[in-house]
Image (cartoon, rainbow, N blue to C red; front, side):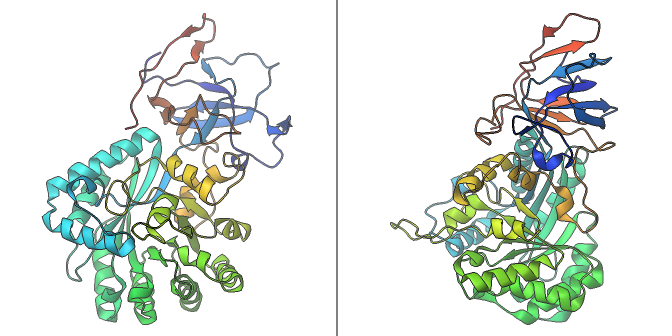
Length: 443
């Protein structure tokens, strides 16, 4: 079969525990392998594999226990900044130094430059198996959207059907100081079409509780969801997340809010941090942790080894039922010199930095839940009727995951879109024969 082929059945797939119903059988302490029936690009059914069952009609692909995940969600990126690092000189350490370098570089941005860099990023994300990507876009003026905003809107339309691309207006908090300006900003974002969210940079260096209130009031007025950079620092006195939770409760906010970073929780005393998380658990808030960039930027001083980990309290958040996503954040720009728009790279870093156990069966969920980016009923992927967007990891196993996941086979709506399938396809009534699928680079 060719690279565009689609199997009717995928047999012996190792799915993560979080994706399976509570009554799913186990074998040797592990979830039983699964058989997926696909039809017209969607999942028709999923059932435990039964070796006594006759081979189904149609084409089958026996994965022999290979790991399978749904399509990935990269919930926090910066396409407008991506790949700018090579043209910069020395960048001062830390978050504020990176912002300074970016402010200089953005003076030379053109539509063609932004489009080329963002398109490269989207291609990398697509090849990694990402189906939903959210990008923040720097927005520094109160009266008109930046050049990058319109470029990203056009790219969202061009990539529709391959990647769902959402855009967040990343606006510094001081621009919300005047309520009228906040309402005008929200109106401009709302008028820019679907997939747009109101956002803000909330930090102790620009802290203004009244401005944050105006942000949420404006979002509520214009029916916008919100996505914030919050407490991206290790200052124990940071109040962004706690104030956000309190405001949402007071305003009876009807939308959904994503709070990225929230590193300050790790610097606060236990009682303060956990009280904030208790309030977040009662709010329509999803947390996003960005382990690669946060480890690089937090507690960064030239010539000194960092003493603190720049990562939020992910275990304590999940223990309270708070949705937590892991995302790529910055890629090859002054904020982060590495990265590949592969969310699994971020998860691998998080596994080490946050000492996460059972990363495949438990924490891979933080890469796959697009429903955690909106308000509404929870919707697990790969349920009957949902798109058959799958990633097959033929060299990884559930114990070492996410190691050896670079080589993968990506299926979009049931059809192989990239990767290399070393397993044979088999059509009922014929003799199986190997049919390799040409590899596609993830770099």
